[in-house]
Amino acid sequence: MDDLFEEGIYAVGTVRSYRKDLPSILKKVQPKSLRLEKQQFAAITAGPITAIKWHNTRDVSVLTTAQQERAVVFVKRTQKDGSRQNILCPEAIADYTLTMGGVNHFDHFRSSYPIDRKSQKYWMRLFIFMCDSAIINAYIAFNTAHVVNTHSHRNFRLKLARSMIDNFTKKKNKQIVFKNKKGGNFRVPDEIGLLNVGVHMPEEIETYKRCRFCSTKKEQKRSKIRCSMCGVALCAKSCFKMFHTAQSQN
Image 1 (cartoon, rainbow, N blue to C red):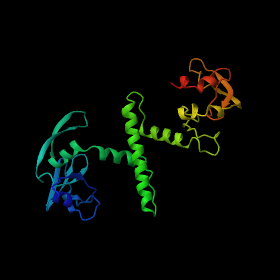
Image 2 (cartoon, rainbow, N blue to C red):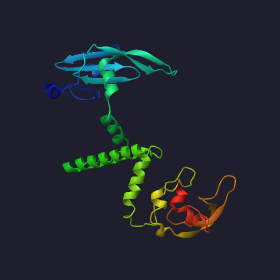
Image 3 (cartoon, rainbow, N blue to C red):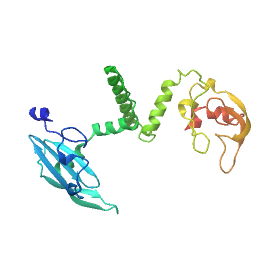
Image 4 (tube, helix red, strand yellow):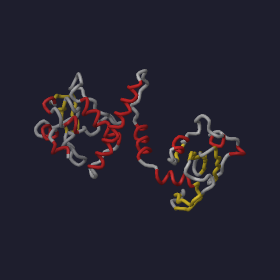
């Protein structure tokens, strides 16, 4: 932040309490007499940088070169009963909350499903970071373009992974189908059910199971024929073909 300030660029951002060389007021472990009460804050300035710690529901620590250490503003916060109340907040934290954007969202997405691994090659960490960036950008672009049929971050990554490895598995008739706690299968993803239809072969099983395509709670239909790729039971007469077409998956 010193370097940015010398270039005439002001900055504000959160900081973790365990970082080195931080002032004692920002440390997580504090003597009981120095702990902040709700809506209290403490601040200290060294050169152009001001360190501020504010306690509302939890401690929030920031470093800033853009605001005064004692500057406060009113902000609205939701209370436990659902009401909105004006409370005093350090200006630096209020500005940061108001203007934080892409970097914070990117860090959140990246930390949810990290693919980073330790490596002795410096370029490997850079390569993995670029892959993570591409996946997150693709997820954001997909949900922006498909306002109605959006995906959760987890489902988007699963669908992407299955699509990428689809033609490179050793045993193509042994696709992974996720199980639920009751032992049944989740809905078969489109990238499994609708691609490589030629390898979806009917096979006979020992017991009758509910047809995944036509069986309902009111009218249960069972079959001893199962798709070898999808792992779900289907009526051989008509449901097997219709299940593996795009029309049946909509």
